[in-house]
View 1 (cartoon, rainbow, N blue to C red):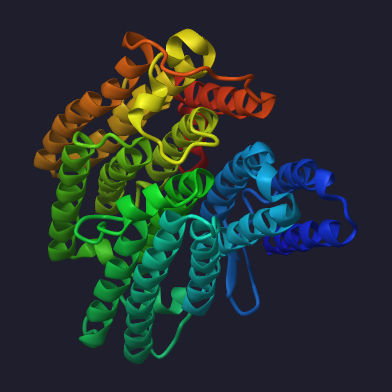
View 2: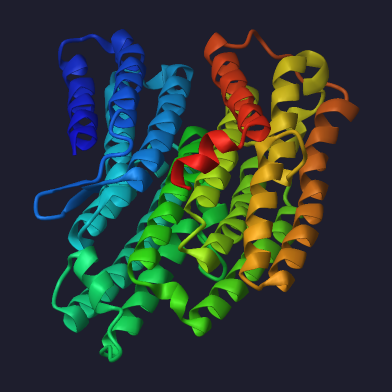
Length: 456
């Protein structure tokens, strides 16, 4: 609870800095504030508390994922320093929206009541709608914002309908009471229908096949920093929330439900990777890559009682690699109208460090040792085999091999092509964020127990 209050207070402080004409202090102060909130949140690890009649629950799951979200938000705010130089008068708005988005993300993994869950998802979604359309002079950005708003609103409606059916079946919004009642021998037919609608709505949010069609256009049209936010913070938040929802509803006891998860996981991995092979726009390629990673993360839903640590590990590995990649993309494509792969030609010669960092992040996403992406996939595969779905693991391995194709297309462009443009000096913040993110990724690869044991 104290984490939510602190994050909201920090967002309000950003807006006050604008009133006091302290724009230059907004980003440094926000990053420092987020680090302080990270320490405050980490100090709650091990506590088991609930607030306001179980509306908000503090436990290991909520604390660990909240810490991950805060770290990602700190990286994204730091990258805002050079991204919004042309919109200095609006920088407080953009930063405050990101902080309120973080508040929604924390509420989504800390809910003890379905009303709080829906409130959190709407705070996060509305913030993303605004950020997607924040480049008002760009037709692509306006189109992305409208598409995201329409599809997101549609998904929210499905989620709300599911919540209503669950309430009608159980007579309560409280997750603990719903969990206890769901073990009953005779459940109203509205309860499983409500779970199905909730799951479909969340599949929209994580861009899982066949509810993925909005993602490539929205990722490509949105400002690059908004795309980074969607593909890292927003995606892992939605996945963690879906895991918590289904765990509370005891959904894994149904064999039919597990078969649906297997089919969606296979479809997401396969469609995402095959479509990514055809892309020449880097943001669009990473959008399809994100769809395939959603398919991998869905494997955790087959072992709901034991896979929380695996989900945290995979989400951390994927998000840190994504942050490192987008730090480089922001540098290469700043002041450009598109993010075509030709922009990256010769980056290995003009800026070897950033090229190496982007290579490392792509190799992590592909699942190559020594990066944490490899060990995250290994952990997921072993748990999925234990759950009895060897076929899903085989498909996952094949898709990991396919993904190497489009990741190496970008890597070859950086090292095998000649530079086609002159690049000016790199802002220090891009180096700092990219280096810290990829180093954390490697550390988690070398010491997976640092994360895995938190939710053991």
